[in-house]
Length: 505
Ligand SMILES: Nc1ncnc2c1ncn2[C@@H]1O[C@H](COP(=O)(O)OP(=O)(O)OP(=O)(O)O)[C@@H](O)[C@H]1O
Ligand SMILES: [Mg+2]
Image 1 (cartoon, rainbow, N blue to C red):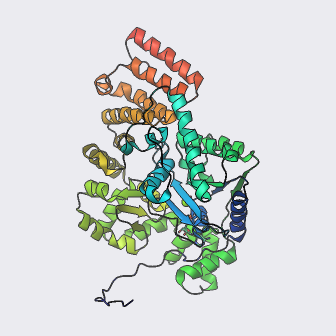
Image 2: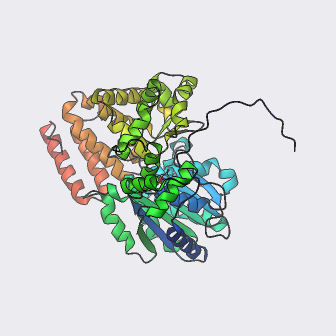
Image 3: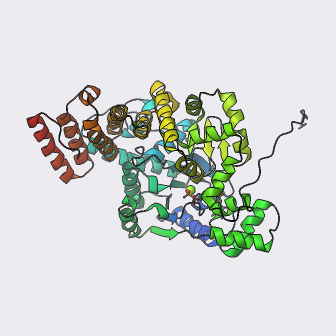
């Protein structure tokens, strides 16, 4: 084959900010390989991997999944790739879904929706299909309505069982590695489904389940605090807590990032301050001339070195979470696609952001989180307002089924109670349709909380306070919270009798 030489275009090479090589983690890779080998030979295995933000959970799992094959990592945090898997043997299908950070209420079934959407895109090559009428269709509103209506509890049970069947079908072709990332942000429905899949795993041949979560986010009362030990008691479930790199590994990482051996004093200083956390090591290498700054200060300093306009767009992107679609960012900033690309090019070159065909993602979610926390109060409100308004004008700026819940969050942060109420009401309906009773209840609770501050709440919801309480009661019962269901039913009765709203729940 002859290569035709085109004109040489001078292009600024992005500064290397991550190591091309996975440093250390030999024991963890061996542990993952053993689990995969068990699954290949007809055994059952689920792995729960915790660790601080930035300690390297995603890198470990994605390197393991991709070893020897097609990379499983994709911008947007979702991928369904086939790779040989680190343990060797027949190729493994890696299905990865990430739980997005979205305020206190998650998107129902978000990682599973993303995995299914990826599979549907590849349906022809994957060779399995979701039969029409399956409840799973509810997770992909763009594919239409499922055929059967009726009791949400049994529909939800069918949906869970169908997810098992789908994994079984896929695993008949080749072993499946199902990776659910960032479970600390999982919505209630996702947690229920993860737990159901792990409980049912003995009936599923050749499916390895891996769940990652940030242990430093598990505050008292966090729902994973109860779930993880329960799952850990199952004989096929193993838990590990990923720790930071050792002093020697940290120095090795510094060397890989710099492209040469670092001075011992630099390696030492970085190790002391980052405590072996690879993300912090990366940040400290980038700015080793700022000895007193914390890693968060360094991330912000990295941003402040960029042109003003780039910073403005990055701040706008930070309200959308780790990843924002190009169309949405364009609408929020009022910039055309080309202008947006030009404005963000320095951030991509500095390794703060990655760009793909339809959007931008912060290289690490902590970068976006730090920027978001650093917004001035007025700026925070204004950016959420612009994001909400953009989605109100064009819901297709986010994937199908997400517009209402995202608007509900944005209007809430924009301090617009009427719109927050009406989008929460819509999001509750969407969640109900997706059989996500927990999210439905959370959204109805939001409606009830806002009720008193919105004079025309009845017009916006098309029903009175008692009606919303009855809906919440039904959602609570469907979600398995009988006690709350009973209290809400009593409150609904009282509201209907008195004809006026009660105090917020
Ligand atoms: N063992 C390693 N060798 C080289 N680089 C690493 C290693 N572990 C992590 N990194 C790098 O450190 C950064 C943070 O890692 P990663 O995103 O995997 O952390 P995480 O634990 O998944 O964090 P979060 O909780 O925010 O999801 C990434 O840029 C990653 O490439
Ligand atoms: Mg991660």
